[in-house]
Image (cartoon, rainbow, N blue to C red; front, side):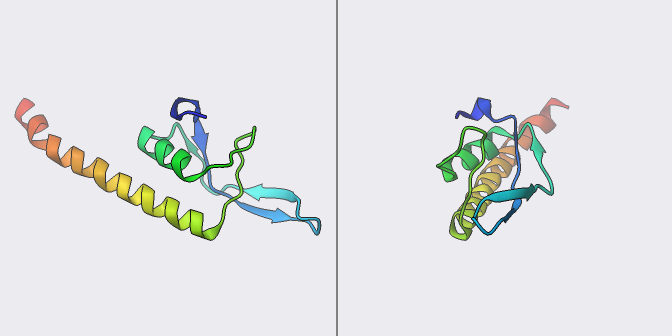
Length: 91
């Protein structure tokens, strides 16, 4: 799966039956058309993606994903701050 294949994403909470099969999943806030940065980090952190895009992950993997997304967002904000003087000059 590539970044351009990712049109939406969501983190959800699943319920399993006594056999360990997932019976329902609640996705509280799905994201449509995620940014390239977000999609890249999601794909980098989440390895075993099924055919329907579902993955089951661990608390450690979620912490790693949260850290990676936070760092990526800091870098994105830093790039925007560096470009702000250019934009202000154009006004």
